[in-house]
Image (cartoon, rainbow, N blue to C red; front, top):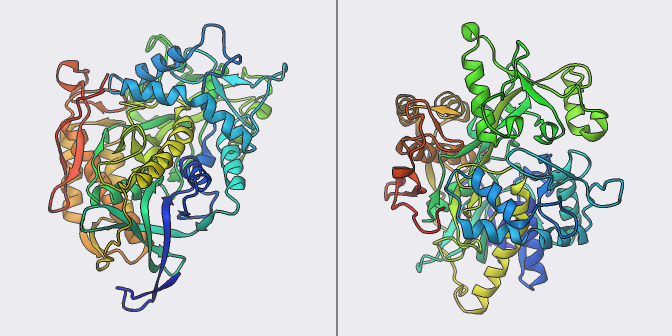
Length: 544
């Protein structure tokens, strides 16, 4: 690293150089970085926490994949594609779904070659479970309900020897006069020392935006940084109105921040949702009952709570008392329940929906390229067309494994073809951005733009954000994160206000019907010259 004159008057800066910089160290980011190193690209990983932090390690259910010779009778690639399209509410890109699902078996094989250990059944074959929206038992898992932790462990171990900058936060992209992204500005360590990482290509693998809401399954780092960075660099995003709420996180009174997840696989093994009176929540709601897609279950829970006498109920229950050996099959869930004083073997688990996954993100092609040369996106920050209006359970780890590899192979091809000449972007003065404090953003989004929304409430949220905004220099991690949350909140509100229907995990109380005549299309969001999110031309091609 070499000295760099800092725009922050009280600090000195630094500079680093690479062929490709990967922002994020979850399944998509580490898969990308490992493949980049194999291809001979000088690779640098930048991550907000430790290498093993992030959302991947919290994933419980597993990886949805149809493996040759290890699948249910009648299960197939076509069936997995069909289930994904059904969950996606008509907005998936059919070609993207088929391509990503088809690459799943090989991606899992490579992951196992890197040391990942999945659970086996009594015959020695990979154990499989079933989750919401799946027509077959095709979800492979590790550690019972600790699949993400095992995937993260294996990839982090394989990444030993990679150049990694831990506790570094990406602030914004460096852009050359040609418009090509050629690096990022970062803040380093607890002192937020500013610096620059220059690279031929930047791969965003920053995860989602769960911290928009007071209760979420996401870790503290999930603040939408990558989406905000991409929008400011000129990229476009789509499907931002579709924020999936997981139906079952462990309920504790006054819980805020990351809440323990109760994996859908618990329902896959026979647990059922009941209300305070013991009545089945999903009875008569959907043909798949308790294994309906997540958006259907979350909406049903919300309706049941709203209809409770006096409106006093704030959670429902997941009755798993009929599952033998619960603690052995679901050790992570059992430990979280024990910490909350709940014994799943003897009593129902109190649960409530919480923000889980973004279904949309930065628009990419099937190889992770965005519309901005030099900028790529993978994992939850990206909109590949796999998820549409609602994610199918356990397709997320699958997507990260497949698209992480594809993106850096695209980088290598673009470098070899001369599409990414080495350019030196200008480190402009430290940017200023509109910021609303995180508690205010979370309160507004949780009240007016969560599972149930309407035009009046979203207008209130938008106006409140406008009057609460202050322009702040992005000199601290807190400022970077709060600026990202502010921008992403506005983008979600813009898309959700415009979609005047209910589809997937976008539920409009004032527009309760699905409208395929007008809304069988995705909406594109970009920033206008003043930096405000606006709707651009709709995406029409490839939409189911």
